[in-house]
Length: 92
Image (tube, rainbow, N blue to C red; front, side, top):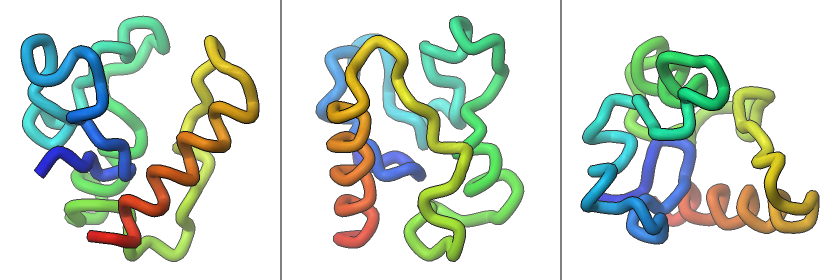
């Protein structure tokens, strides 16, 4: 499965699988965390570590404040990515 707990499709990332095996496989220790000064993705930490779920799909707070925006892309692109992630979660 290449859908991460947040609904992102890891297989769509240019770092997958050579540089990153996917969020579930690396326990939320994504490459971008170094730029956010974090040790673990907050979505992964909440979903998997705190709530014991595989994805956020059944969470009543979806999408929550833990879903971060990529500052390197436009608001429209961020919104499109979020909609894709939410659709991926619905399809699981």
